[in-house]
Length: 258
Length: 242
Image (cartoon, rainbow over all chains, first blue to last red; front, side):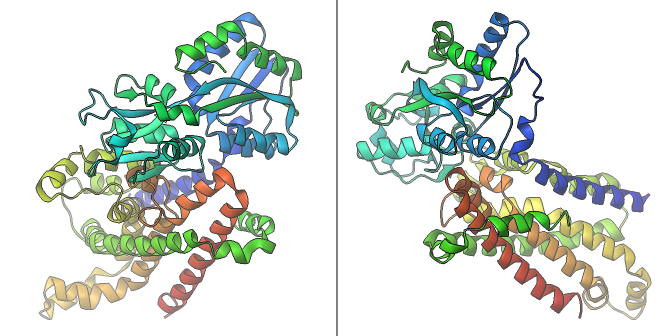
């Protein structure tokens, strides 16, 4: 009995270490290439709105099934360059999109379909009374920013440089959702996140607009991919996302029209 | 083959021509130093807490022992990111113990180097406990009993008889624990955050480099691999073969 328990524990060790390897990004985009199946890789900040737009698109195009794979734009771009079978790519920054177009994986020119702006996310009720970007320099205040390698971090750096305000953050998070969750958990007093993310978490956080964010607006480009298993459906989806009803959904989520 | 092929993949894609100047980038050394320091401290913490725990599990009978042993493996089963969130809920500013630590001592673990050590020890300690427990079960308890009849106290018997008997098991467990702590990513970035020089260990630096520059990520990974393999090989020769 004792031996079997140790055996089970060892098996668990092996299983866990095995999982670590198989969690590699390409695995997520292996949905079949059968016609009528559309695979869309989209930036994590598009999750809520694209889920709705996908349903509307399916309703408008019977027989087409849309599958989304959400993640950090840069990671998704790496998957596409590595040959993930996807039809459409929607990124949170032109720089990330550029890595895909430069690798020759895009079919046509990427189009900007929405813009996103930064806000200061604080706990519900704003207990620290934060009103402006300059308030974030207050001593003792804990602030989370995104790392500069990811779009929300480069936007934050741009906004802070434009102000100019110098913040010493306690952490540089790997994506906007983890910066936001540090606010939700109360580990930091404020974080610079996209307006859409603050809006999606409206139950826990408040988004405070600040004028300097206008200097760091993020464009979201979308493009059909060259190796799309279903090029016609891919083009149709890109057109659909840029149409009126889809834009309404995106604006509802806090995005701005391009 | 299966285990080493990814390593060759890294070597094959490595940007050899620009390697020298990439290696001298200041961030690498800080992250490497922090990684080695925190992994070693996490292993020390695990030894101090884990060896007695393994001894309890292997040598004593108490109600709920099986449950305790199953609980020890929880960090192995838990996805590390979930482990990080769980640590925040306990040691965070609003956490079960964290809020008390904060108000009483003004100590806050998240976003500190100590927080990195806590996260790594949480994830890596089970490897040590399981190895040491296995070694203890393999060791003949009669030696300890003989020591006891010759007048040795529990602590003396443990230190002079048991510990030398299970030394290879402790060394192997310590190495596993150290290696796991060195590679720790999920719990660290969730619990301790990411700040260069303070909480940005090598795996975190690799992840963020991957967002922008695959070559930089490969260089960082190679540095981490070469250093850890060198250290593990050196220690293995000294401890296990001896």
